[in-house]
Image 1 (cartoon, rainbow, N blue to C red):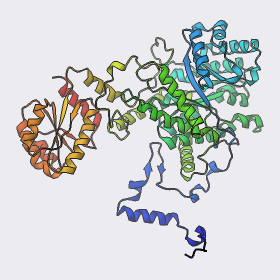
Image 2: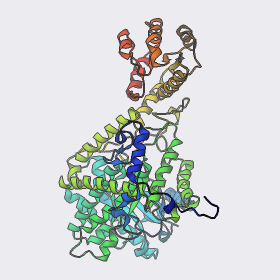
Image 3: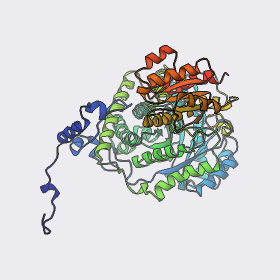
Image 4: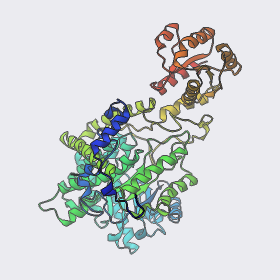
Length: 628
């Protein structure tokens, strides 16, 4: 090209079609199936392609609106200023809770959450709790038993009035959610009881139009292992149930919609969570629109803005290697911030084993401040807009969640399914399947089922049993309850069992033969066995089986792992087995060689490989080793 010629990308390079790209990829796959190799079948129930192009945006309704405009897929605001929330237990001492609230307000918090005890609720208690807190400058949220919520609303109206505040400008929430109590505590409430609790609170809070007093707490589903589309579908059905109850009780449709706040979890699937919140706003606007009577008024259109308080998930938090929880919650916070939620609560990294410390709460606050002050996430509204991938992901998750939502409605709605135990049954089956994936390492939890810290001891740092704030003695459940579990719990129980044993099992890598294979398999085996808390000893290699066994016994090994190549196992494994037979060591072959059946006939039964159920395999080893 001459120096005076200019490069024109559009004219000098012919356009490449999607089919040409796909043909090139198929050629590079060298016979492998394109769909099986590259198309991702998500747990949500839809396929994700390996690449997207501009033509994939055609027909998508998610690209036609602007931020702050109906149907709000791009956000309910024209800015991305979300509130930074910290929750404080105020059940026992209002003065201490107040002191802590005043302290954290000076450290970046813009939204306070107070957990209250209904038996201690008085005007003076609230006066003490809110002393020195300037309500117009901060969102104030309360969690209390639904039966005491109307009383709380009346006290707040009275207190704010005496303080001279314009109650119309105050923002906050009273988290009234009887369906949540049915799910968590097994309370058998009639539909009339649920409706009455909600309607009474909404009417009591009439003078606080900025307070969202009805909660949809789908975060509990997230903490029970729900995938994004599942949580969203149930949240929408939950919200629609409450909308119907309120309008049936004579509450205007726009007031009913404005009363609802969605308290949602943030899962660890980064892009899926961004899409979940975007899709949620779109679908909720569509649901609220259905309550028009008879004209879709401006008030109802504004009320169709989905208000979301998002909380980082507890499902994937761990006791071991707990600082990794910071990485998990940071990416989750990023998802919610980029998605344009209204408020975010970051769960402190140590919540799985102790009451959060000042340090962990400080870090949780700073995780959001970092995103605002250093990464400037609050300066751009809906950066996902126009992304070929994220727009398609938003449309796909919206379609799947809507399908599930319609199915819930056809089967009677959220209240009906909860009262019959169907939601609990569905989530229990989902949790079982998800924990099975964790057991097989299809779902990875860094530091627990993959790449554990080999030397960490966690037993002494566990100071509490996990429980919700302000829980009292629970009565006998009248209906099925929602299963709540963390993904890492079974691996942690296994490792704590090992930690409590009289002797820590020692696993010795008998590395021999093919250099590349023995190194790879020794590393795999060390990682595998350390998930149970065993002490692992790797080696550079041995010339003979005899030499390796001698070194293992010198190291007082309880486990000997033969690490070599598939071709060499047919000769090496029988030799090792013959020398070890009848002895105390547990013998393991690393891999799944073609000669496995022949080795099993000799009595060799322990093999570890990528297709193993890691958890069940380690449980069987513990059963053999720890009883000695």
